[in-house]
Length: 263
Ligand code: MF3
Ligand code: CO
Image 1 (cartoon, rainbow, N blue to C red):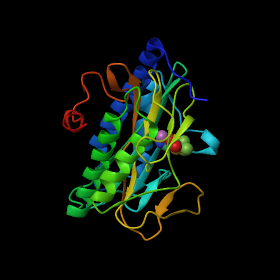
Image 2 (cartoon, rainbow, N blue to C red; image 1 turned 135 degrees about the vertical axis):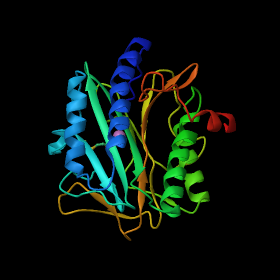
Image 3 (cartoon, protein in one colour; image 1 turned 90 degrees about the vertical axis):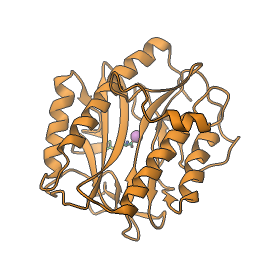
Image 4 (cartoon, helix red, strand yellow; image 1 turned 60 degrees about the horizontal axis):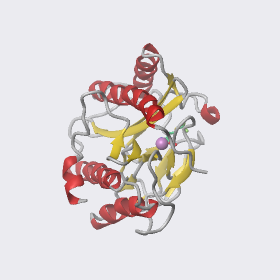
């Protein structure tokens, strides 16, 4: 069952989302060669708790850290550890925050030094696929319109979408109905209604869409060792259009104008 939120509840989710956005911004500033991913985890946990939030991921099904830090061919769910970032890496950072009982969830992929043209194109395509999906988050559209926006843009650019991991509804719990695949058919799936909140998260590989799970039973990596990028936002469907809840105050949905025009 999809639980739609009231405007007052969306405001609470936006407060959680602002901490997520601020945390990702802070982490991005700390991403440079020589920094260990466990250091990023400690910075994130402190940032979240100082603002009255709780790191949603920590303890979720036994997950041991506050954030996911997934370098290079790791798609998602990389457990922060002693790995030190190197010039030429890309790193996907995923942050979830619970504030006053409401959850925000977002992710970005960042470049360490110069990761090269392929890596930058992969990151740009993944981010733009998310923006296009967000632009479809309007009442009366269907979930397949959101999913297909991602798949069509990614595949037109020669990359592949991961099939076995999906985005999700979100609210009082991190994972609510519906599941949001990064592939689909326009016009299919549940109708989007005012108050629905979707965590949309394209996971895009430079090579095969196939993935495998690591020995720690968390880290998901590309089956062929190719690079992978991940961007995520928590988005509310409103009568006024998509409302990105995982934005810092003053960030003002920057970067979304272009794709909104296309839509
Ligand atoms: N954004 C991811 C998700 O929605 C983060 C979950 S990591 C976990 O599934 F450790 F909490 F599982
Ligand atoms: Co998520």
